Image (cartoon, rainbow, N blue to C red; front, side, top):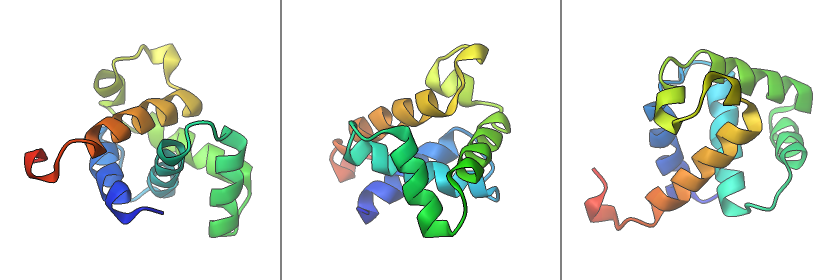
Length: 111
């Protein structure tokens, strides 16, 4: 995993006001980085990979990410989506796109 990309992902997910103490925060970070590195990867493959690294089930990863997303007060505004559009796949995909855009900005311009 690209460390620089991961650091950008931490800022991006933190900007969404997802509580960092939740395990879903960490899983979401990993999912966003994986999706941004390979946009064609299927969501189930992301969940399986994260589950294998953390010794749990893909279902547990899915639930943890969903819970973390539900605990954010600002994610809808940050991603400019409606309440009914907040599901794991869409959030991961949108954050991955934002991460790719953010990572392309030269480091001296990032604040």
